[in-house]
Length: 300
Image 1 (cartoon, helix red, strand yellow):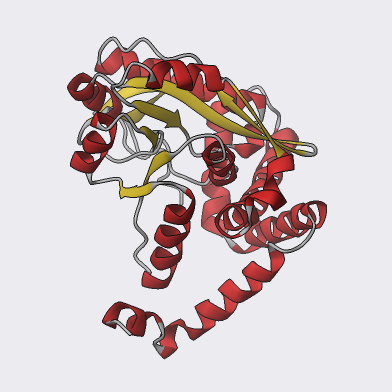
Image 2: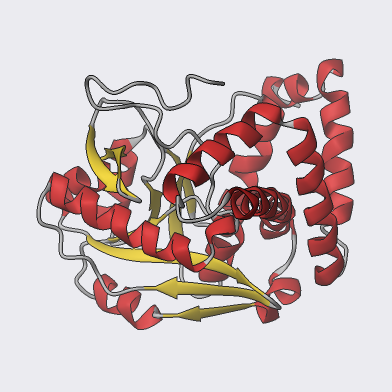
């Protein structure tokens, strides 16, 4: 038994292991019951996570000013329901076999991915942080091998499950800081899942509008495509009444860092408007501001 596994079994993680066991059990529920349970978990989170609820409220007021207070409040609650469903969907994507999931998802636009891979320079699957992103990626792995970037978790037990579960479905899981590994994958003509829609600070970012608001937008995709010549295929997942639809769009014409960042944000905004409750509003997307602008989240 190696030292890393011994660390995972330390008493301070026993309660977490118990919680993981409970969540594992919930993923065995029929899909409609799983959604119902996910909604209830989301509403519990809504009541307990005061700070995240305030962040979501600020974001939605900024991005949907046309909604009145009652409509915005309803959308915040729907978002937390979506988060709860997304948690169980993520774990289902990690733990359930293909035969349990396959009938729930439809994938459109695979021809765009096939055409891009025929170029031989790799493909970046440009995604974004929607609450159903994990299960959407799982549906895609049923059709093609992918390499996926991810943010390592500080908790070793959660990191163990994240890495092992993703690597069991994707061909390779790459920490988001490992740019050389990403470039290596693309040079091997692999499809690389990548989401650049979170606020990573000013370093390697430009301000590009998202819902009409300047948002610090990571330029890694522009830099990587310049090095590798990889095609960029937008890739989104949307939860629908009886399952999920996975959408692959035609390759983006990459033109330069600012133009690319603007185009990427517009694509994500368009998809968000199709199902606004499903975007990750609890993230401080507008944390970093252009010089001279006040912190949007100062009140929390």
